[in-house]
Amino acid sequence: MTDLDALQELLGPRAYPAHLAIDGTHGTALPPLADHHVHLHLIDESALAPHGIAAVVDLGGNPVALAHRLSSIPRVAYAGAFLTAPGGYPSGRPWAPDGIWRDVRSASQAAGAPGGAATLVDEQAEFGASVVKVSLNAAAGPVLDAEVLTAIIARAHERGLPVVAHVEGQGMARLAIEHGVDALAHAPFSEPVDHDLIVRAVSTRQRWISTLDIHEGDDRARAAANLAAFADAGGTVLYGTDLGNGDRAPGVSAGELRALHDAGIRGPELIGTLTDPWPAQEPPHGVATFVPGPPPDSAEDIPEWLATARVVPREELPPDQH
Image 1: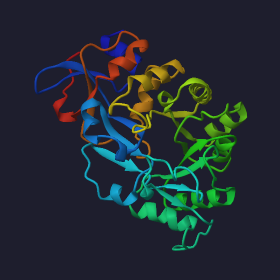
Image 2: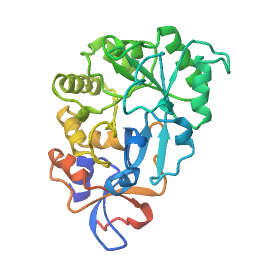
Image 3: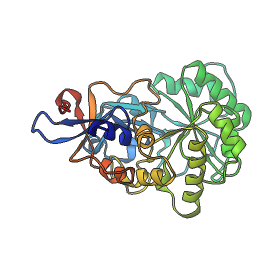
Image 4: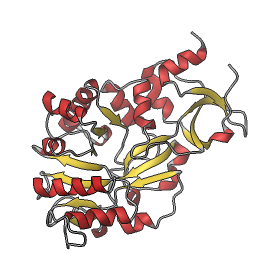
């Protein structure tokens, strides 16, 4: 086995030895990395690319501000506002200014109906949303009923947008899975998800965004166990940190990667959670990930090694001869 074969067995087929053209530093090149769950209004975005993140998915922000912002990273996708039941999560939270949620008051599919499902999905789409986010948090207030949730999903799919859900509280993962939500913003952490429901989620090609490292205690253990079972059943896992939730530095999180590794998502599969371009079809063009220095000796060492990554222009990262 060549060094390249060993590297690609450890990190996946798109990894290769490379060097920075500007100064000759040797290291490893990977596709651009994405954090699939952030809140840009709560973080310093300028620190993301120097610390390895080329793309983000903002899962809850003011759609007007998001549509008119200038970005310092290659790609920003966003959901716009949380769609929630009147009085539901995240209304009233100190981190959630008024502009980042909308109260959905009916299942109306009539365009322009005040508070209707179609009206509020259309608003996010017109402000450039790539996904639609719904709040299903029974632990923190009222929750969208099944009729309204179905109407939101139907309208979002008409607009070509996947629906991602915050699920928290008893029965919320089941509500999201059974009604066709496309992705979960967090690996379910409030309760164990039974095997049949996990199989159903996998069969519908649902994606679960990890966010394991924001939890402690029983919530963390449940989230890790649910995510491990979902991955074992063939489910697609996406790396996400919920950046802005707590005091976490922008960039690739060794803690999140370590939690994924400990849940059994390792080596090329771990890299895959970071390099999946969802909700886009292709990764950002013109950039790559560069990790300086020798590659890791084993999958066990990947989380800390990858936390030293940076985003560089692809043209400045020629491959080493091998």
